[in-house]
Length: 130
Image (cartoon, rainbow, N blue to C red; front, side, top):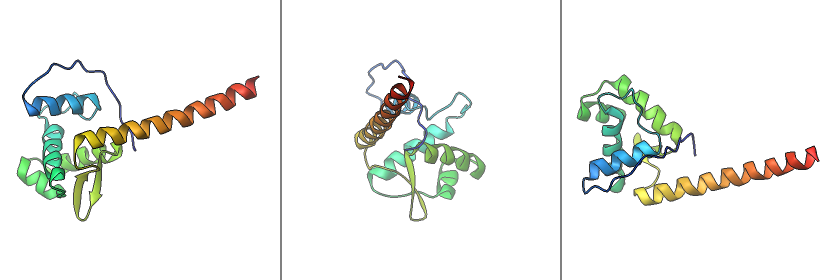
């Protein structure tokens, strides 16, 4: 797993899948305030849909289909890759899991493992300090 910033975002139940995806991405710190045209969010939606079919998507396809510059797509892909949520597959990009609940379980497992390691080191430091 890479760098994910978990943010407590108030959740209001919605029957709108895009609003739910926005909340999920916001909660995982994927979309910043500087993303005025929601380009990262729009890319995330494409990646979610493609991943459910086990299809990767190229940066060129993302740029063309979403009317974004290649530089914008590459910028957001770097962040999504850095988070560990998106991986390279074949000649494109895909979510690391085919569905979102499995993705969140992976994040939870990775986070728990990291916190366990931090706790072990903290105990060692406490023991050294006496």
